[in-house]
Image 1: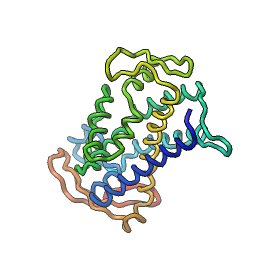
Image 2: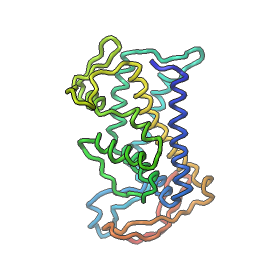
Image 3: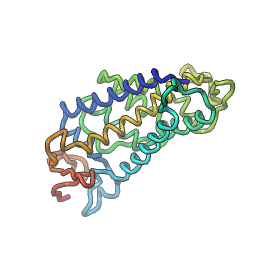
Image 4: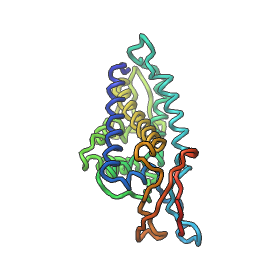
Length: 275
């Protein structure tokens, strides 16, 4: 169970942290902020030896489409179960909804596009240069989340580290991803429990609701606020042309190039580029 008041507290906490982080990056590291909003990415190793194409791309539409569908689902899910209509002051425990939440939780913390986006935000929050090539491991994503993402937020004294700590836990992700759990008397029992000091044997519904809300609202607000910045980039910056540092095909050097934002497509393109 979670109350309307507590849900609103978590929602406001995460949205304000995401908003502050993006605003700080825009103010302190504008070139990297533009790369983040423009979704600079490393697309394919095969392109490194291609005579015409570079593996370094902007406006990675594949990840954008994945984000669009994820945003649509999260919005619909939260509207269905966490809209708190008039007179409703709490979301009561319901096994059907909780089973759905377990799947949503896994999808959030297993999503490579989302984890790349969260990692890059952590990197820029720590005042480091934008990373074009981010490799999310197939296995041991918990190490990537804890040591590569959360630690960078910790290093920059960004409270998003605490948000991740309150939402993500390896035991939960492992048990739910492999369907190694059972529910009994308002308790989720994790059948993956091995007695390690960091391991979780069980979690009460109320505690689960908090972890779920921290996880899903972090994902939702990161995607939503980043998308809003992209849509409003001309209003935020006063221009549709931006200078970025673009890697050579082998990634050993950088050069300055211009990219353009197109309102009709809500997308970016290179002004002119010879690879």
